[in-house]
Amino acid sequence: MSDACLIVVDVQNDFMPGGALAVPQGDAVVPAINRVAATFEWIVATQDWHPRGHASFASSHPGRRPFETTRLAYGEQVLWPDHCVQGTEGAALHRDLAIPRAQLVVRKGYRPAVDSYSAFLEADRTTSTGLAAWLRELGIRRLWFCGLATDFCVAWSALDARAAGFEATLIEDACRAIDLDGSLDRAWQQLQVAGVGRARSDGVRP
Ligand code: VGL
Ligand code: ZN
Image (cartoon, rainbow, N blue to C red; front, side):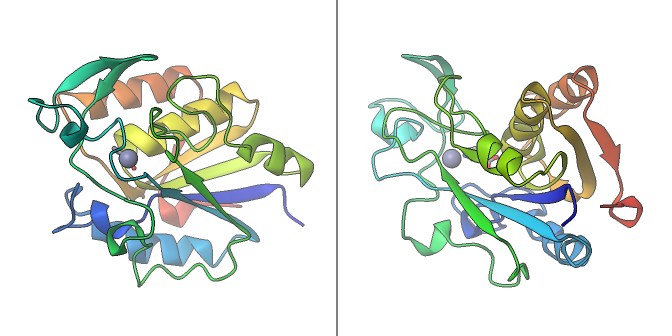
């Protein structure tokens, strides 16, 4: 099989317009992802998958509000509205996402006290999700990233992919951003420094 894999990040109802943590135009990624997914043999989807009362929820910190930051045991943490609670409709993948051939769904953020934007390493920067080992075991070397949100889960995943030795390219028109206090500009800067490529979906060559 091919050594390229499409990584579809967090295309979940809570990140869609009207959802608990809505990403502007989040639903626009769905047709773009469906189109590129048809050209890949390997497809992995990720799912943000928090227990109720998760440490990343503002509601778990009395007096704190969504989009403020706080310090947790492992460092700075943005506090989010409750979102992607395990087993809820908000945590389900968007119903029009058409990736029936996806071989793996990686769930992340399930430890009560640790967030995980990245599909590879949790926010404590030491706990592995197991994804890098799975990809290596199957001979996959080149990763293409799409989904939500560009400046959080997609960027952190692509950066960790580079750090783990994979080639990584972000498919711009198949991503949308939250853009909190300049987070999108910062993410693009970090991605460029780390050697993450940028492509449009019509230029994807798996
Ligand atoms: C995400 C914030 C909190 C994401 C997940 O998928 O980008 N952002 N949890
Ligand atoms: Zn989350």
